[in-house]
Length: 175
Image (cartoon, rainbow, N blue to C red; front, top):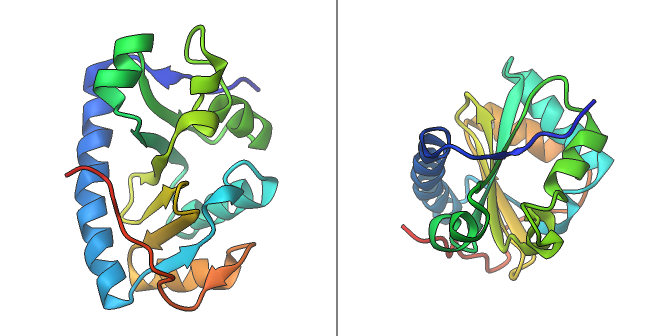
C-alpha cells in the first residue's frame, strides 16, 4: 500500500472545507443539546482508532473519509508555505499503516508541519456522510455527532474513554 497525499487543488479542498464548517455548526448545536459523544482527542494515530473509523463507515456503507486540519490556517499558513492543503482522503485500499504514514507525512521541507504534529484542530468526515468528528488538541478533547444511530453505535464501539457528558468542551474553530 501507499500513503495518501495532501490535496493540492483548491477545487478538491474547498468543498471539504465548506462541508467541515457546515458540520461544525451542526456539531455545536448537538453539543449544546447533549446529542454528541465526547472523548479524548489523542487516539487518532492508533490501530484502534482507525478500526473504529472503518466500522463507522461500514455501518453506513461508506468507504472513504477525509481528515482536514482546521488550524493552523489552511490557506494563509499551510497552503502559503507548502502549496498544498491540509486535507487527506483515505480510500478502501488504505490500511492503518497508510493512515499513520499519511498523517505523519512531511508536507514539504518541514516534518514538524505534518497533520499529526501540527494540527491543533481537525475534523474527520465520511465521504459521503452526515457525521463528523471534531478534535481540539489543546483542549485534549474531541466530539462526534451525527444521526442518532451513528452516535449510539459510536458510544458502544469507541475503543477508548467516552465522557458521559460534555467535560467543558467548546468549539473554537473559525466560522
